[in-house]
Figure (cartoon, rainbow, N blue to C red):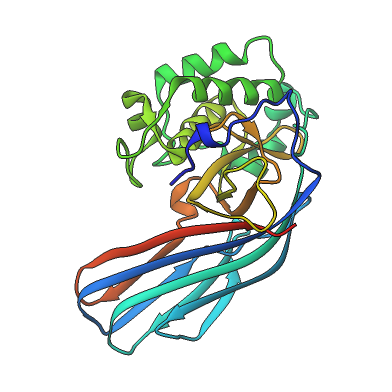
Length: 298
């Protein structure tokens, strides 16, 4: 669930992308079932949101077989499309299309001290984003390393130091871990994909008292992507930290969040942002198509 780091890494002191991009994203997922499914209930977290760096222009989600759906915003602020099917079917296809305007990277926020983060107000407000989770558990060795990286640095600087350390320690390699792997699994293997880079970074930041959350979305793989060119990529993940305000960083590629990042969902870890989840009654399922096409429109 990531884009190869070598394809996208850029220097933070080098030439930056243009000020803004307009990007079309088409995320297609298809399933085939060994026996007809007679009923299924599904949730899709595939719709980009708007914030100070990103503006959603248009979005739609279509399924085959066709179904009626409704949308709601979940606890973490992610838009969820819920739909169910009751007619027998042996295949299901979901296509989420959107057009998003993105701007250049947002500078890290350096408005909070360690004393601020230790205050009762932060613990009350962001307590859930300070606690260990299934995917980002506590580990004595990682806590010790995070504390060393914190020494002599402000919270914002510690976020960058931890993110860069994770980037340097892990080797990007598909197949070593899976969607159910934890940060500890990736750390022990010293390998992983974007989900693992994000979980490891979250575990370390939370262990030193920095609220941090998981972000899922997409990444255009070409810094100099031509207008009209379609790039075949995959879903991506990164982190956001609170150091007086929320800001993001991509530890997989060691870059700021910029024009090529399109965010979709946020949560404590992957478990809160899974693109598709649900239950069904029928034969075993196998994925027959999973693709993400990104086209820079302007």
